[in-house]
Length: 205
Length: 200
Image (cartoon, rainbow over all chains, first blue to last red):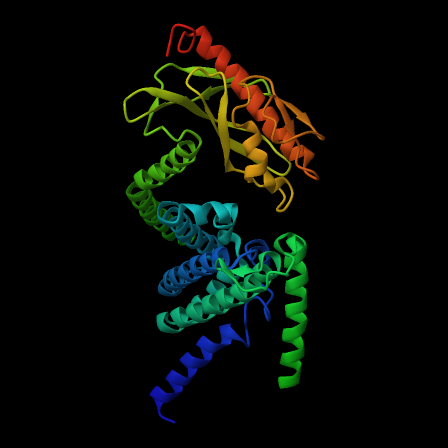
């Protein structure tokens, strides 16, 4: 294999890692707070996912660019500062352009600051790798997180309202299962999904 | 301290970035809040076309005993006549604060209705304070002390509000916010002569 082929292969591997092998929710069990809190419906889950992708990419870019300047004792402080900045910007944009969604998400947008996925990627990837790899890693992890959230949210929304994106999918005889939109529904769905993913992953290995 | 300069420079740059974004977006954010409230009040007072903030300062005592400023909006019809009043009121609900926007008729005698600006009540139970069947009981109710009852007729419009079954605390919270803020605001408005027998 030529040098460029090795590089491309590595990029693909980094991108795909976030989707399955190192999926932040199912495999690394990071970012459980938003996973449980905003997955009552698909729309807020998708918005949260997009915010996380934005913050992840921006913070990975900044961290990767200044990785040679970082001293161990300042590292975490710089990460938090970078992340907090972009989360605040994302929050302002949501408030200005999708005010209803911003209300639905409430405190969970500012809480992205303490989302472990972002600080984990800054520490594990961006602070050690060049710009391109960091961006691809952020994209893979962000998309992996978003897809997972949307799957969980789709299951919960369907069972709690019979609809997804306002489209009626369940037959009229279906009795909405209100518990699924409450925290208990989040825990049960996540637990069952984690079990399922473990079974599938176990078979593969 | 090694490399503290990096922290200082970064803080400064990030601060600047947030300040610029905030300055650019804040008029839009403020406008969104106003639009939302106006949209809600326009449903409650269908004749209202314009909302003018009242110049006089109205302060009421919250249940905790603090004096709080209330911004009163005068709802004007397209013929520039006063068709009602609206203001926001806050109180504690079951899980979190409940923030309501309350609308009244032009004489402050009857409630035109309320809507929920902010709440975090239990989905499926306390959440029903947003539903029409509960809110409609307030439409046309006398602007004064309201009472929560657990059994009664919802379609009868009077000062008795029938609670949502399984969510007495949320129902009670709304009734308390409404009673408390309306009586106190009315008292102040009468004292200042903004409303009364001789005023329209």
